[in-house]
Length: 347
View 1: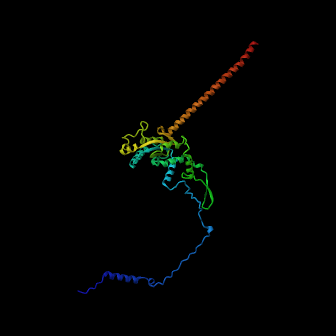
View 2: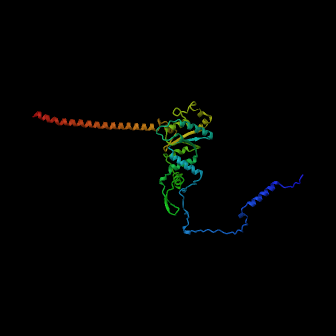
């Protein structure tokens, strides 16, 4: 047997590859490089004079961040702004008290409400789908009460302009009349002093007794008696005017979860076109036949009948006066003719 030397084939192959890589390198890389000399790079810089440097004025207020009476980035401030917007833009609102409804019960209530609103026929005068814009949501009672005060006692059009500093240092007139401004805070504070008696006719005085406990509001984009009646039949049924849907027509309404949630929901009042209505008033609005179109038709008919009666009365008085004057004229004419004929006969 021939003598064998211990030499790994892998090592031999690797050394051969290394040699080949070394010999395959270009000549430029194999030339020893000269020692590097560290050189500092220099750039031409232009130093602006201090008078020409841009500096924001110390009293500059960005237009997107107006001054506020309370921190604007907190959740309470954002809730307050959303509630004031809701009160100003919603013409019809129902207020409910709820008692520890679970998420599953709220889902069942919203499901039945959507199904009832979808059954309301859409008239030709409606340009948008009202049913999809009707929502019920839980509100923070204290923040909603504060938003109601701002809407009631704060008038943004009466806020005087103030001087604000621009980026260039100039002064411009700016009006800070948003709901979180100092003007809104001072207006509410002045209107709700401890020793000041609130008038009973104000919207806040009428709604303040309802702002108790956990609340939820049902908002409508327009005043639609048909959709209001459909919502009342589900959330607050009262036969015979607003009967609950039958079991055959809507079996899911009588589900245990839905019924448990509806029993914890109580209608306490409403706000229609800036006016406060109690439960009977809300049901009266929902009971208007043919909706607002029918109410307008009844109003037009009443005005026409009243106008016709007034015209007939005025015409009757004029006719009676004319007949009286004509009869008097005929009597006077006969009186003038009578003595003349008598004189002729006597002569």
